[in-house]
Image 1 (tube, rainbow, N blue to C red):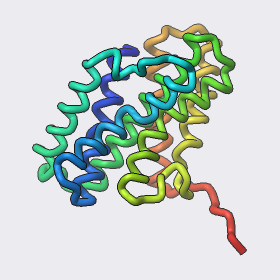
Image 2 (cartoon, rainbow, N blue to C red; image 1 turned 180 degrees about the vertical axis):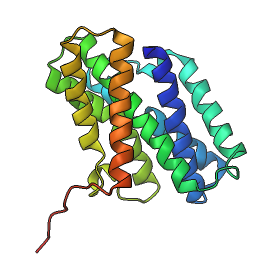
Image 3 (tube, one colour; image 1 turned 90 degrees about the vertical axis):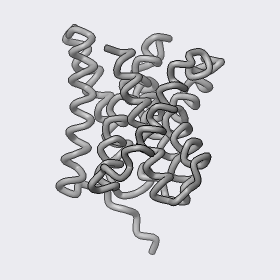
Length: 200
């Protein structure tokens, strides 16, 4: 389940990055680079911080192949998406839920404090999108009023809360990722957001 979620998250973020780049009218090379950094940017930063080098995608070419596949699927089916922004949002949301779990698990594997694990999960889920948005000349979602990183943090607390119940690990992964994805969908539907600071 863990490996499957990792592959799904990589594919989802790669397609999210590719769709964003195409929306910005970048050339094919630009689209591929944005897809790549969106998919592995957060995980790369996480691995560097915990001293896991070479980083994950350099150890396993499967991730590179998945990103390439996501890149081509996004290009081939770009006209099939009825609403580009809706498709982008769905891919981004799936990646958010899955990558939070991956970051949490990486921290647990090396015995880090739960708070640090939650930070790693949030970083893994969000920073690929941060790099994507910066390269596409956008203010990253994580820094705007829209609830984004906060959902990852909440998902981390849910994860550790459920973990105390000694649930089956696959059930634990599935429930945590679904909680993050559902809250993200509800937050956008009902326009939940954090109030921005007034500069005055």
